[in-house]
Length: 245
Image (tube, rainbow, N blue to C red):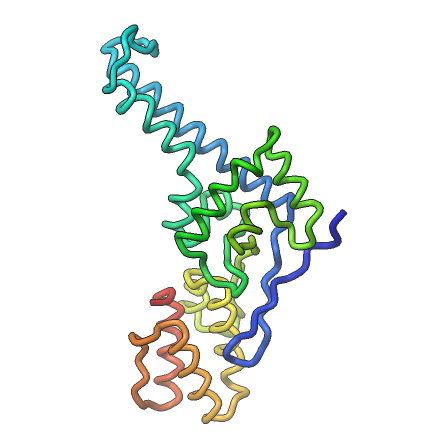
């Protein structure tokens, strides 16, 4: 049996280690149950409505002869909804799905950032193995036995599930505090940490750390022109509001 699920520790540009609590089997299973319910309801709803419209009457029966139009309009879309649900939504929502969002967890890489399309594709292809022999038997067993609560797909893709930041420090400006959640988890922690520590830093350290954070999360788009301390703080708060590049 695994021990208590540890935290994911990330080195931040501010010199302070960022800690992201890893999601355990219970939270992951609950999120998956919500997502499974949603995708089944969506897939069945499409099938029912499309079949009735296709038949022109209150009937869900398939045509007696094989028809490509029936498969393309009635059968294929529900299959796509069911099998591509996680991949499409995790790409669109930066590691989240409705189920994960409701539980407060998201998929990240080992450096705390959002996974790319390749990692998410691998992670979701391996659901076929995790779901064996039934009811996610392999996946649930691995999550219980591994220290970080990983299933096969996470091992292959190099991903983990972490709890999202639930809120910023109350000393932060309210607008920035409300919008920090739009950054990836490590980015939100780093910006929140720097803004919280801002009053305790000497002016040179404030400007230097703010420059590093902006370079890391905005790259070539970062505004690195000179300015006073208030200008650099304002740039950090705009970063929190924009949610990254």
